Image: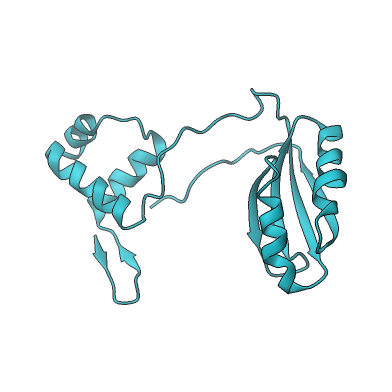
Length: 157
């Protein structure tokens, strides 16, 4: 791994193999990965630590399937704000809504674009009407319900 003056990180082939393996299965033992890469456990462990320290690996966590837990309605919501300076206040309020799982500050029609998980359409309607649309600075929302998520992946290196 090499860090350029502009802060951009360049990773080598072994780091790419480690990252691709971790993205497929973060529970893979270091010893198994080392054996597959034909390098020592210590070398793999050191590279993983460098990737974590540099921020290339943001986190290792379990991915929960929301549908199994009863959250079968995924939607995307464009949030219109009264003025751009409302952004921080709106984001602070959105952080208090557990159904909001992603928020993006965007270009285009929406000031903020959200990913929301709900149990059903009625739950979604309540989140929209009783929570999001009640936030000071939010003028209106536009909702798109996801019918299926056929592709779920990270960027391949």
